[in-house]
Image (cartoon, rainbow over all chains, first blue to last red):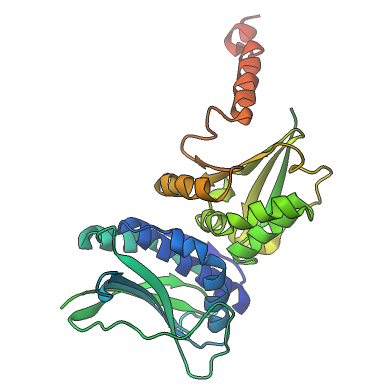
Length: 167
Length: 162
């Protein structure tokens, strides 16, 4: 776990949480045995969207959907749920990717032929961001969301994380 | 061989992508060809910056001029900016033949090495546990420097006996 203390602005929280969300996604993708190059190819676009919608408080969830490319069926995933009431205006920022790693060790990896995509769910009326378009979430029927608690914290914004497991 | 270092402000003051854009502008100085090389690896570099490997391990640019080492500042150091060294370079590191080495964690080294090979013939990954690869010019110079250092080392024990 990395922790730092300082006097941070809301803009610092946005940058920090955006960065830690992307880093966590990268850690998850590498740890579950998939190729992170799709993530890094889209890094700047993802960063722009997440930070914009954290700034407007429109971001609800950042989702990693893992699917079978032959059937387009959902096979698993991870979510980060934005929490705008997190924090007490004191300057602590932290991210716990070790908690994510230990969960993945317990849950196992995915076949390397699986594909993934990064999706956000946002509030109605959110501003458009270049490089992002609308899509439909895959069905998670037969799966249940398992929270692992808060994974990212800052003085103004937090993010709960969790994964989808078969019901 | 001389070495010049820069320390660039990163998160949470600058995003990882913005940090890489700053590094690109600093090194490429408007040169179109090298800017494209830097842009081609931007996502991979941003992932390395996000891992905070740049805190203690530099992006190393080796060319005909001085060797350039670029570090990043994070957290309190990024916000205060007290340790920043972002001055314009007095030479162009991307003139002539040049190579750049990105610091990677042990976990990321293999896939970033593979990914870089498909995007650039000038960017290479190095594992921060192992340091720069032995076939890099920089490491040879480093070994020479170490050899020179050994040749002038002081035996403190013998010195104290005098």
